[in-house]
Length: 426
Ligand code: SDX
Image (tube, rainbow, N blue to C red):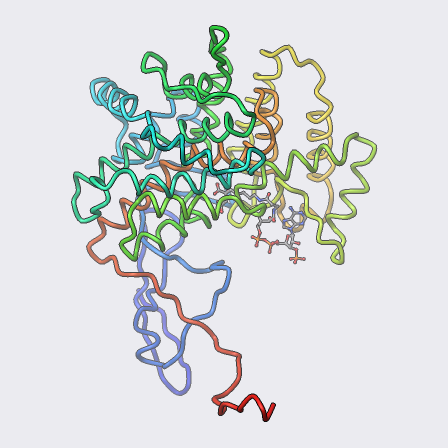
């Protein structure tokens, strides 16, 4: 099949490529050469940037598959490191493969001791995302033996190190922000329990991980692990296309995720629920969200791809109830506001017409706050989980033989050529 267009009296035939499932694409690679024109799609709403086998999203049906497996099945049956293995290697691990993977990840969780000094340069009140962005980038200053991206062995070592060390750096960012000593990883604990202990243990007493909380957080990590070509993943791919080392590419992804329109929405959504404060103030905020002249948006609502319920939000809501009841939090006013806000929004013509549903960020903040994390750590947790997705997508891009540096063009609307005017004549 091919697509035909006629532009500037030129007939152009462009091949149509079909995927396994989902929309086909029109390969416009030769368009500029044949017409002297570019396509124009600033938000990439109709643009596929690559081929990928990792994650599939059907926004209309609310479907999310990691390597073909539905997110609901992975979240309810597996653990996060199993999902990491699946995203990296494309298949669910056997028991032996899982044990080996867990062993290797566990034994890369420490960071270079000099990273502690690196942290000392930050103000204690620095946002943990600022600290995480910097410390992930700093890894390339410590691990020169795994930055040669042309070497598959070094690529895999760097991938394992990144997945293994991100919880340690995230926990260090938290501890530093509250003035408590860093806690070293403990190899006897599983990935998520280790992270919880590094965040909440203190030298003065034994820390006992709550297995229900650990399981819930592990599931939250699975939900956040990958999501096709979202803004931060596209950032990682573009940075990686220049040959930059993986630690620098992941740091670029962390920086992009921080924005409130993207991964920063979980922090913004909780702040919004706190600002609304009570159910009787919801109509005022719904009106503001609908007001064209008001920049306010319902944080945690809407999505570029999902025009149906975000499947992750459903699991997130269920997990929220589990955690609150395990922690004996009977009536959380924020949860009351969130559930009433969702009910009202989903029956409001504006949200129905614009197909705005809760996304993964709508409920996550309530759960993370109940677990004891401050709001400023919410996006750090998102980045922790998304690191495996960024690494898997970066690896796929590097291993693609047709891979070239990403270099978009533009529609120039500036000045025509003009001559310089000397200072004394302006
Ligand atoms: C994530 O890409 C991914 O996959 C991201 C992510 C991942 O896992 O990587 O899923 C994670 O980032 C989830 C999204 C978190 N962000 C938020 O919750 C912030 C609030 N949401 C919006 O800012 C917005 O919905 C976006 C950014 C998520 C999507 O923006 P789009 O696709 O560019 O849509 P848009 O801004 O063009 O909105 C379409 C219409 C507009 O109205 P019109 O101009 O057509 O009249 O819907 C309105 C918007 O005003 N709208 C909202 C709204 N979101 C969109 N109105 C009120 N509240 C909102 N939240």
